[in-house]
Every structure is written in C-alpha cells, then in structure tokens.
Image 1 (cartoon, rainbow, N blue to C red):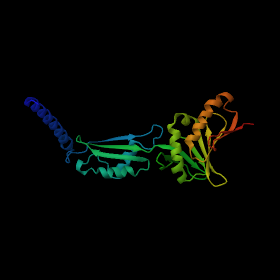
Image 2 (image 1 turned 120 degrees about the vertical axis):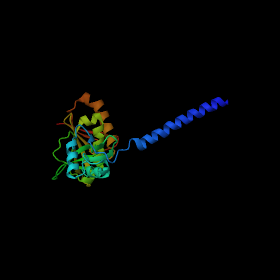
Image 3 (image 1 turned 60 degrees about the horizontal axis):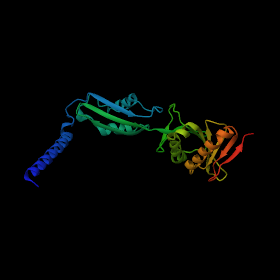
Image 4 (image 1 turned 90 degrees about the horizontal axis):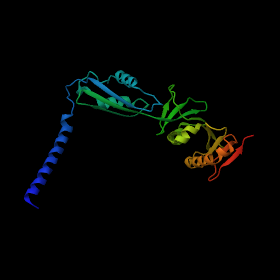
Length: 253
C-alpha cells in the first residue's frame, strides 16, 4: 500500500476518533446542569390511554407540592430526582416514572400511567380495575369503556386469569367490539367457569374454564363467520365452547 494512502486512512481514522471523543465530552460535560442554577420550570409528560384518564398534570403537581419536593424555584443541586420519582410512584395509578435535570434550567418528569384492561365487579364487593400486569387499581369514579367481569371473583383470579384475558379482548379489534361482559361462577366441582355476553345477538357464550380461551374464541369466530350470517344471530340461546374441537348450540325457544 502506498505511503500517501496509508497517511490518508490514518488521518480519516484520527478525525473520526476526534469526533467520538468530542461527542462523549459533550454528553458528559456540556449538557450537565449547573448546580447553582435555579430550576425555572418543570416539564411534565404523562403517557396515558385517552379512554382511561386516572392521572393528570395537576394531580402530579399537587402530589409533589404536598410532599414538598416540587422542584421549581429550587437550586438544581437541591432537586432530588430520586425523591421525586419515589413520590410519584406512590400513586397507585402510576406504572413508571423517570425524572432528570437538564442544562436549560428545567426538570423533566416522564410518567407512564397504568392501563386497565377489565373492570371487575365481584358479588357483594366494590368494583375495581385490573391492568395488563395483574395490578389491582381501585375505582375512584373513573368512567372507562372496558369489558366488565362480574360474579364469583376474588382478586387472585382477577389478577392472574382475567388480566390476560382482558388484555386479549382489548387488543383484538373483533373481540373488543363483540364482547360486552364476562360472568364468572363456580361449577359443581368448585372450578370457576366463564360465560360471555356478546354485543351482537341474544345468545350466551359458555367458555367453561378460562384455559385455552384463545383457541376457543378462534373456533367461535369461525362459527360466526360460517354460520351466523346464514342462520341469523338470534337462532341460538347458548353456544358452548367447553369441549375441544366442538361447538354445542342450544336453539332459542
């Protein structure tokens, strides 16, 4: 290889290395906030579902102010980002929170709200929401368009079984539009079994246990597509999906 070409490659490599060193320096030093600077503003961003507004900016601001950790007006060095995160995380409707200081004199707070997937109305008890991770969220008169699960339900069943089922229904466009209510009861053996109340038609869908609900609903969707448009949505009073590879229909009287 010619000497001139070697020198050219070496210069390009040194230039690229210099750029990398500058970028690292800029990230570590140029963007660091000045400890003696005053926090001039708080940028609060809440990621949330438009249909489930459990928290808002004012509520978070009030929480920080009541806990005496609201950063606006403090010196940057006095702003405790970890304490701010802990305070916001104490709100049961918050899933994740991140707080950091910026070189422009601002403190940024990013909050992620828990997203409920089902509203649970147990027999004889107050209702509550459950999110996709199985977290129970108390009901505080929030109006949310969700499938409702009622009947013989305890929090363990709601958190483990209904959370996954509710998330499936919510994220599937067809079933989200079709299923209106889940009814849970115990059979003769003491196992919890599920009935579904559709929005279209006068029939009840008997799922049996919630096991393999995706397979059962796939069979039901095929049945809907092949049979209901032909015989009509009100021909059957009950559609039983309890048994594998079978659909047992009971006619309306």
